[in-house]
Amino acid sequence: MEGETFADFFKRNEKRVHYHIHDLDILDDRNEYYVAGVYALWKWWKIDQVSEGSIGLDADSMIRILLMELYERK
Image (cartoon, rainbow, N blue to C red; front, side, top):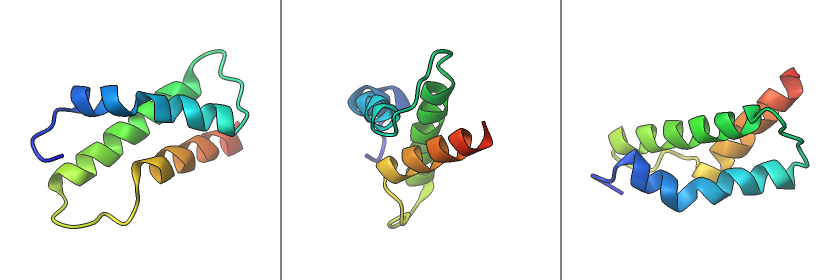
């Protein structure tokens, strides 16, 4: 992934966000959860770009954790 733009990474992983929203059975009328999922992808990509080794968390976990935190706050 080194040197990969976020746009390319996002194109390959956008369906992950939709999958986790559906899997958590979240109704997302206002796209709040989708935006949180995109932010989670960006955050994971950004950390991975500066990380020398494993960051200890995969993109799916990052998305799911942020979505569940948002859900619990609502």
